[in-house]
Image (cartoon, rainbow over all chains, first blue to last red; front, side):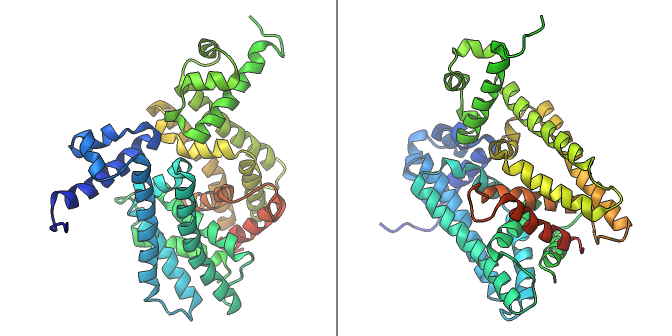
Length: 198
Length: 198
């Protein structure tokens, strides 16, 4: 049966995911029970199973949703970038990554934290999405090196190194801090571009 | 009463820490019980309390021990570096950080993952040790910038950015992989030195 927009299910589903994300990030996946998630949402524990078959599915949905959003976000961003200009593409990637991740601190945190708690097949699925994302940066680096704009040994490892550096912003960035998000983006863009010799 | 070297306590203490480290890294602090740690060590649950008052103390000991070793290791390394040569100091720091961290993957992992499970005072103590370590890199960057060897805006943030990049090696490095540890060190040293314009 088709659901009416704004039905009970449509509202509760996102609430369940939000509550699970918040609780997993604060206490860790293993320490949080379905009962706690239900209490946080304000429904009976049994009602939770209308929205998710189990805690593992909930974790996977959160991690997969985060990676899907990241890939879709970058794909949308990349559509506006001149692909023949590697430096412009690298700058767009740098700014996008910082902007996207600093706005989703809990999702980024559990995406690193809770990988070990995914079932093997779910772990593989998230791993494949991560590799897709790393490949998009690797491709920019390869193209820049071929064009003689970048100096890059080992484009795959360099992509992982730069992503680790950019994700690190989340450990210290505060919304109301001394530096605005665009200022932080510019600071890291300077590190990134120098690191590949441009 | 003074302990004889090699006594039961001297052997079991490190075994308890090793077992706790392994179990915390695999399952997460919250999911591991003192009973499981005792089983892993091969002692009765009650006997564990001869070595540690509780699970929180065990976690703090592991995280503090890791930071103490890191700071002592760098201090030892830095003693051999010509402090008037900022590039040499930065290279030494880069190589030391990768070498030290890739040899202690579990300790590095729980040092990031389990910060949220420290009591407030333990959290502050670990935070202070981390800031000390970041300051040692910040100092190298400041000295290099003053000497006109490096181009560095925001030395503190740059130090955190570089540490995040270097620690990221742990997510992909494998002891028997295609690249040896010294090759990885050289690869990252090139990224680091270019990122600060040298």
